[in-house]
Image 1: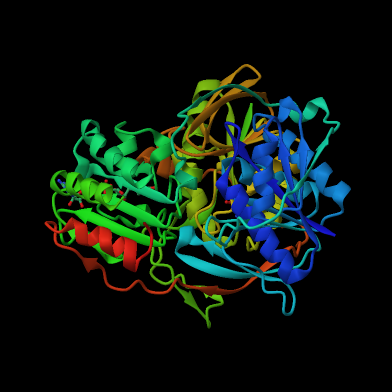
Image 2: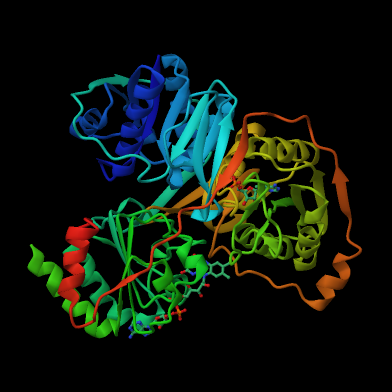
Amino acid sequence: MSVLVYIEHADGSVKKTSLEAVSYAKALSEKTSEGEIVAVALGSISSDELAKAGSAGASKVIHVNDDKLSSGIIQAHAEAVAQVYKQLGAKTLILSKSSLGDAVAARLAIKLDAALISNVVDLPDTGSGYKIKRSIYTGKAFAETVVNKEHKILAVKKNAVDLKSDGADAVIETVVLELSADNFATSITSTDKTTGDILLPEADIVVSGGRGMKGPENWGLIEGLAKELGAATGCSKPVSDIGWRPHHEHVGQTGVKVAPSLYVAVGISGAIQHLAGVNSSKCIVVINKDAEAPFFKAADYGIVGDAFEVLPKLTEAVKALK
Amino acid sequence: MKILVCITHVPDTTSKIQFSDNNTKFDKSGVQFIIGPYDDYALARAVELKEQLGASLTVLNVGEVETEPTLRKALAIGADDAIRVNTFPKDSLFVAQQIAAIAKQNNYDLILMGRESIDFNGGMVHGMVGEMLGMPSVSPVMKLEIEGNTVKMAREIEGGKEYLEAKLPLVAGCQEPIAEWKIPNMRGIMSARTKPLQVVDPLEESNASEVISYQLPPAKGAVKLVDKDNVEELVRLLKNEAKVL
Ligand SMILES: Cc1cc2nc3c(=O)[nH]c(=O)nc-3n(C[C@H](O)[C@H](O)[C@H](O)COP(=O)(O)OP(=O)(O)OC[C@H]3O[C@@H](n4cnc5c(N)ncnc54)[C@H](O)[C@@H]3O)c2cc1C
Ligand SMILES: Nc1ncnc2c1ncn2[C@@H]1O[C@H](COP(=O)(O)O)[C@@H](O)[C@H]1O
């Protein structure tokens, strides 16, 4: 038996959240004795990158090296993963929650007649039955869910387990699959992507700015601190609504849900819809000139002060640490 | 052209989430229910497409009788008729089965949903329905135009967007800025009272998963404030106490 993990890559690098999914699968298998961890990767990607799945806990990587799969066509990815899963005779599929992962997992649930549990935050309890904890109400609560199907797909939230890097080399096996034309009914005509930046949903540290930053011309201060911290940048919804920052940086209920180790919020009031996107962060720092800003109630550390004074000093202090 | 929009009936985004009956039931007291914010974007785009293309627009909810005011609101915003599948929406697979069954009877050209519900946040129902109906499913969609039989879309991906094309019929999970939320006007509210709202019985229950108990996250401790003239102290705390640097 084995556990299959769907791994994604962006611009030729395996996503860190996908490697976390591999480590999750490994920890799961140690608990449920489901055998070896097999990762599946679709499209062109180097074997060095695939080898990272080995360190994270996989003993084998199945590489479907078909260039048609290099872009994330939802139906085609679902069909390819389903074929690999069936050939392996796996009972469990693990993946990390993402824009593509969610869309692919939903179709897979039907193809594999599997129960799909999303937003998984912990390993299952298999003492009696199969119980799993998942986050609901946009991080405001958890639900203990019993899974009754033999086949299971778990879409794991960031930070559900620690990423491991002590595994051995994985065997990489290249396979060819038959994928009919119907699976390519949607075509990607172009992409518009900032490359080189740290991706917000993957980031371990996030620095976000709100309306208190007064205008897009001041974002250099946010970016300066982010650069020193090795962080991704985010923003509140009004900031992306007015067009100061791109939509994919907007954090919250209707935007990206982040789960970094450190979230730094500058000039953001802390409306409940914003908090919904950050409440899984390990540590929250708030910088706001208003001591009554609601965000302080959700923060671990805070500075009451003017962002324009505090940010340059803080950036210097972080620099001095190195 | 026939458009279906699937809407959820969910607690307002400012609601305090609480549970009752020994943490086995959602506590509805004092909670106001709304159309899911993403579903509201889907509905807003559907109303625009209806006007632009002369399409018919049906809204659908899988839920018990308490969801009818939410369906009426969708009618007031501009849907022509509503369907309620009369059952508790116990999990996403079950909901997807109900939606797919209605869709099979009515042959919609376009099925719009929200990218995710804000109660269970699965982001799964659209993909499941797409697979059940043998249609492409695309999510999260932030732009959607129809030209003849072709749908042109922008989909949000990590760090940007991708542009896609597909043919109708299609299922899409929507998010902003696909359209601006629409607020019902007086005429809409009046006409919604007499628009048809059909109640249908559910298909047999599937039993894939079941929630047995709920839990709230542990309460957050008090914030530790650092003086604005002593930012070095904050850096020290983040490094030595929180251990995040
Ligand atoms: C259905 C729904 C969904 C929503 N989804 C989201 C979402 O996903 N994400 C989101 O962010 N919002 C969301 N919102 C909006 C949310 O309710 C708030 O309006 C929004 O988060 C406020 O953004 P802000 O904190 O940047 O701006 P404001 O509320 O205007 O706050 C600005 C803050 O900056 C501080 N400030 C001003 N000047 C300075 C300075 N010089 N130095 C330091 N601090 C300063 C102020 O004290 C204030 O606290 C949603 C709303 C609804 C109704
Ligand atoms: N009970 C329901 N009734 C109608 N539509 C639903 C229901 N539950 C989910 N949906 C639709 O499916 C989308 C995704 O939901 P989910 O997979 O639960 O995140 C929602 O935004 C709705 O459009």
